[in-house]
Length: 345
Image (tube, rainbow, N blue to C red; front, side, top):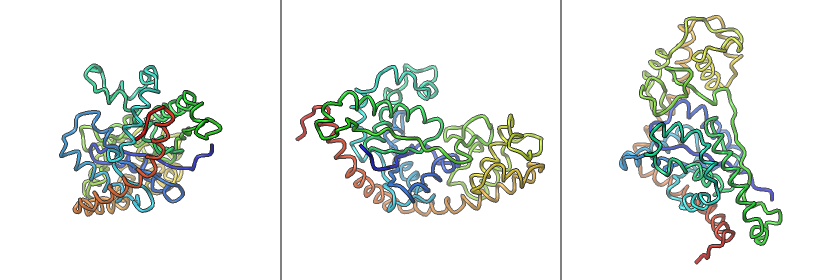
């Protein structure tokens, strides 16, 4: 069966979206909506795998939605919604809980990292959320998923679940008219760009993160001009000038990170950046990087703040997107129920 090309991705509403989210994912999202049918989700079901204050969660859902739109996601071109408004995600996740194998989840490195040594006190949701991620994707039969390097393992799990479901239920799937026995596609990762993995401004060996204690480690999409300039100025570097060739960035993680950020924001490549700044000190490079960050991110912050002043409009956008998402997901979920053997009313 040939599946219609469809893109799905999402981010959790926990903490402010930052430069790493923008360069690592959202620029590609914006580009994809020009050529593909795109579904972009605020994954609030994933957020509660660790406890969230309810009032803060509602606010965070709206903030992430505002950031999506301010960055350039068009709710008329793409489907933009929050996950909990479409019950197909949770329903299909339970089916996948029964398809996926325990050994598969035991190999998921992110659970080990997030749960740490106190795994016995981690929520079941944190352990099983890769199955929910698979449901997020396959509820729409998405064929392409923009993901960071840290999510590639979860996408592989989604592919394994899709294949096992197809194999386990091959006969009823064929009886429903799928002659090749393929009900779910094998979603492909979309990972491109010079800064797909943006690192901390305080430690070039660690990924830029919402959860990092120091706010100086990241540039938030809501930061004002002065904050952006301050964070670039204080970004960790080394004493050597920038090299003239990309090979010279090896073993210099902070230098490589800042050059990658500049290249991504400027829409160019690391070699091009080094051809301009090679041999110069960071005292010359940082002001240029700060100016570029302000130019690209300042308007996004301004628009996000404007949107947050009208929460009713954000809620309207989410409700409209949820309705459109349900129109796609409900027929697929109903067929899943038929395949599995449920009786539908």
